[in-house]
Amino acid sequence: MNTDILIVGGDGDLALRKLYPSLYYLTLNGCMPENTKIFGMARSAREHDAFVAKVKEWLVENTGALYDDVVWEKFAPCLNYVQGDSTDPASLERIKKEHFTDGASLIVYLAVPPSIFGKICTALEAANMAGENTRIVVEKPLGNSKETFLAIDQEFSRVFKENQIFRIDHYLGKESVQNLLALRFANDIFEPIWNHRHIDHIQITVSETVGCGNRWDFYEETGAIRDMVQNHLLQVLCLVCMEPPASLDADCVRAEKLKILKCLKPIDASNVKDSTVRGQYRAGVVGVEQVPGYLEEEESQGRASDVETYVGIKAEIENFRWSGTPVYLRTGKRLDKRHGEIVIQFKQNNTRLFRDQLTDNCANQLVIHLQPDEGIRIRMKNKKAGLDARVPLIDRTLDLSFCETAKAKRHDAYSRLLFDVIRNDQTLFVSEPEVEAAWDWIDTMRAAWASEEHKTVGYAAGSEGPEESDEFMARDGRRWHNGH
Image (tube, rainbow, N blue to C red; front, side, top):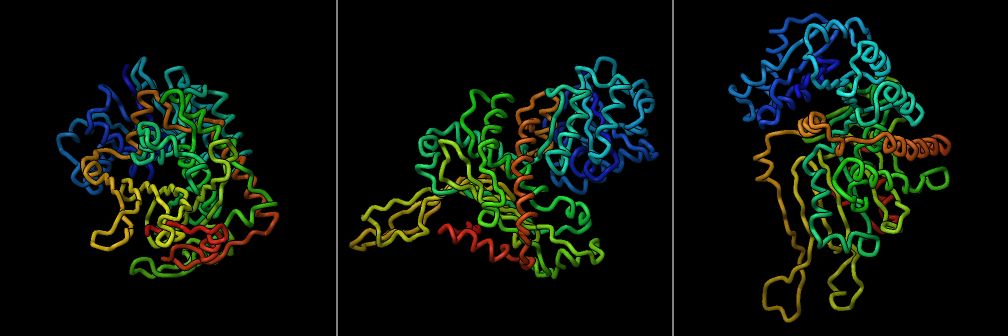
């Protein structure tokens, strides 16, 4: 069946930086179905040739060795620019009549603010463009609370069935995140020890060197908790901690993730101060660059704010597998490095055999790198070579680097997810109950912050985060794994 892809907001930043390159990668990999048409839709007038030239210019400048003139010659004819108002049924009907293929599957990607999602859905329905062969793809943020999410989702569910709605979280398209399923369930050595009896705790970290910059107003409304934790970090937590699904189809995988979200212990007024740390970056040096603090960013215009640009959370999963094993989440802006990792720290034995050499920080660790480099490292103890009468121990790392695989990679997270939309596979997309359960947990925490006047603490840009975050871990006799 032929496929038409309509990108609403087709001349915007998201479309240019992510969507067109990702569709180009599908062509590069031979995954773009024959006779696919791509329509960038926006209100502004633009010549078709100028639109195509702009997409090509971006690809040439930003895809490096993956740009190929032969591939471009195959991809360019798929591109079309259409002017119109996505909230106006007459405008959509005109585009449908003039451009779309009769009987083709239609994918509508909403690369626009959520405030107009409802109007677009209504217009699609009125223009007879919301039938069984239509799939709609939506970007976060999906609301800023459970209440606002349900209001947005009601607009979708009034027009579309759940199996037509693809809620995208680009973290789920990352190879390293998808590999969690293979790591856990295709390697029998892990499953018997993947539980509270053998694992002391888990850490999930995503740090960024960039500040809020020209996204200050957006960040003021979201903060780190809603920008990163509610979606990306909780989805990674689910994949790390969920039970084995009956199969890898969408319904089975999403059902197991939902169980984890529903088992998260609420963080409320009774435990919020012991379970969370909030930070806001101050002026400092990132690399060799002097950068302003959050309140000194140009877009702030001198406004006061207590929004968090860093958050550390102690999450607890109240089920049989994970009872007593905390999962520490943290994310922040203007930190010392761009870094994403999962650390599985195993319990340390208390035998006498090597007691004099095994300090408090010698536990075995499984470290899964998410970005910028992908790979897996296992921290182990090994005998130091030599003629020592005893058995002296040294730290050694078993490194399963993905460097060679990364060099051969010819796609990105969005191309994987867009390919799944075309194939009508929802496995790597987030279900409505998952989003609702995540907002439940986040809303309870945010309400506790407000009721307990849980203020942000400062941290210098270019640092590893607030000192209070290290103290937060030290209270539990643990420490963050800062890459060493």
